Image 1 (spheres, rainbow, N blue to C red):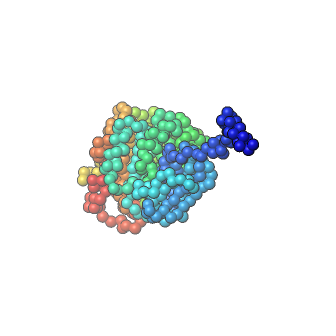
Image 2: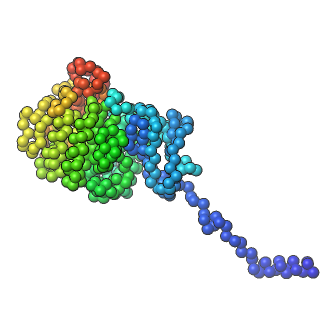
Image 3: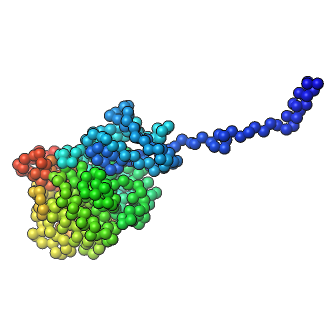
Length: 460
């Protein structure tokens, strides 16, 4: 009887096969591996901290592990918030110290952990440290010249680390969208972004998709900048304009796109307070719209360029700012040592040019100035890191005007600042030096620039 029942059951199963219940894994499949689609990239460097950012294709928690060597990442900082935009403040660090790092989630390593992923904290404020700064103006394309400019700089600088780098606005053409930044900045410069802090300025093309007054849009979403004075200087309350220190250099980054029109008094009041507060031996200011240019944009006729010259430049010179960097015109123009030229180009007088030489060691000699107000400033229009456009290139304030691609390399050490224009072939097509005895508080005000050891005038 039992045997007959078993045979019948087997027949029934053959006709009506067994339907298994779905596994929880069938309805909730295990997530695929998370991938980084942007970064990691470094932001907001200070003597004791740095912000590490990256983007993933799926939301996850955020982990940064770091240490003294790639094989000794013994410290970790985590954020359990699930996000695709990861932003981790790594703090409690030692000034002027190199750390290696990796990023990931609580369960997955995503990037880093080898010798190419590192950052070096800033030196303490006021510390004299030989500093290399790379400067790109209007660089926001992936054209052949733009890529060549990137590649020749890295070949030229070789093993010398880039301590920090600057972008002078119009960082991603044509509208500063997130996708344009992805190709023109984050993919194009991925290697340097993960080991050197980038400090950008806001340009008119960045402003097509973002707003400096409300601090909204892709530009403000993707950068973490020193609005609260975290990296030195007086808090501006805005990421559109801010300041920071690196050793004995004070940097001021201004908004010539929106603040100059919508919020000028507030920015100027902050600028005055910030420069009043700094005790750095060197001061460098940067923004997008050049105050002096006869390139593809004319500083005699464009309102933002006129306003920056009329309203901002007098404040900078009253506080002894040494170097001003700007873009907008797609050419290279470099001034004499100037003071007091706030009007149209036709109003320039001989008395406003404090040194009419070429500023080159081995030629007319370095521009020499003392600390303090109205001892002269050099203005550079350097909007040629991806584009070249025409113009008369005959502004009378300029010692050099070139329709040349290039990026700037600025070296600062002690009482000396040297700037070089490195073109897309890797050739230095312009250079100048500022000698400022007393810029380094630890050095005596002695010597003459012609006899100073020419360390900053070496090949690189």
